[in-house]
Length: 177
Image 1: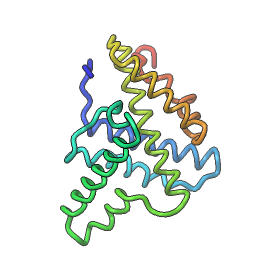
Image 2: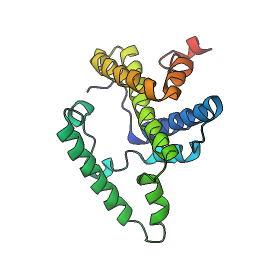
Image 3: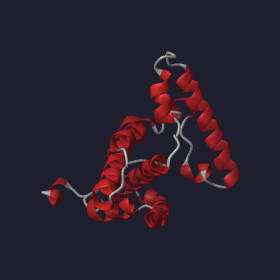
Image 4: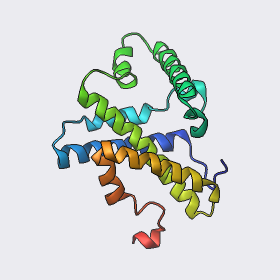
């Protein structure tokens, strides 16, 4: 879609990492969970690394149906493996821990929060674009918000983040002061 301000992968990854970290901190502090917020931030930093090989696929295409979604997940997994195999063998295990989910409920939940952080980052982008007068992001904002509303049922941290932190996004500096 046409952007009023281009966003690069580094900016997006940093935002996802910061939001994932915040979601885990919310879970730990407010809900007594034992989530590794630092690892969530690292996973957020690397969550789109496979796009170096695959390129970015638009969300409506990627999630059009289960067949396409599963095929794209396979392509991403292959790209992740290719990236991991480019590392020196002695360093590879440290990065496999970031790229590949480990066993355990806390690990699975933490990775779910990283995916939620990615959706929150997308919502923030939609808010910023709409506030800049770009109406092309209206339907993307609606569908992203619908996805997040479903996630709020499973991940209370998402609800807290949206309630406590989402409003300031898209405000001007004067409005924030």
